[in-house]
Length: 108
Length: 120
Image (tube, rainbow over all chains, first blue to last red; front, side):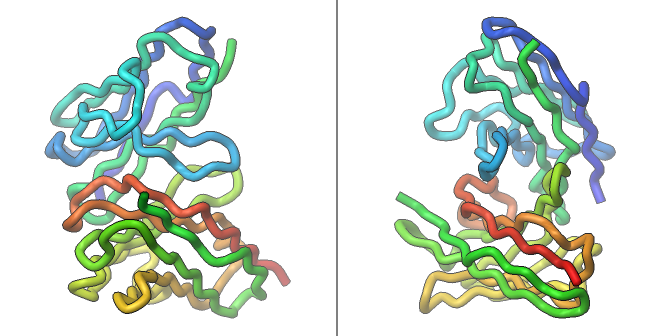
């Protein structure tokens, strides 16, 4: 099983600031199979990024993904009030399709 | 527009079983992967397993192998997740999610979630 770790666990920032979230995998993965999700309280996860860097339909361009091998990054260029949420990375190339533990982005 | 609508909340006794449904509409069903993901209260996301209805064979995370069965009915565009021998730690919100054509595709449409509470 491929284990994903995310850092930091919590990120406290102000609206307008830049957020940088990291995701590391225990084994090298094909970047085509790395996704990022956003989840707000009481809601289902929302796909933001797939293939490590491709934004899903309707996702604002302030969200960007990058990385390869075992290290991946989600960047939110300027935080909007609606971006404060929990973010998960997931690899979906090798079963089981494991998730990271999440990074909470909260308001400073 | 693709929609996934799940069955309602369940309260179950330890040792019993639960079956959650996930009806899809507005898009293709048979060749799109359906995954089941759960989230215990205050915890993260846990992928349980998935199925491509056309092929009919599910694959599971090892943790759930033998205790969970995922099936799909192409005639009603509905996927199911059945869990047996429930225990208190199975209390969670269970989500279905639809991916693209093929197994290794991102889950871009999600159901609203079904809360399963296991309590004596």
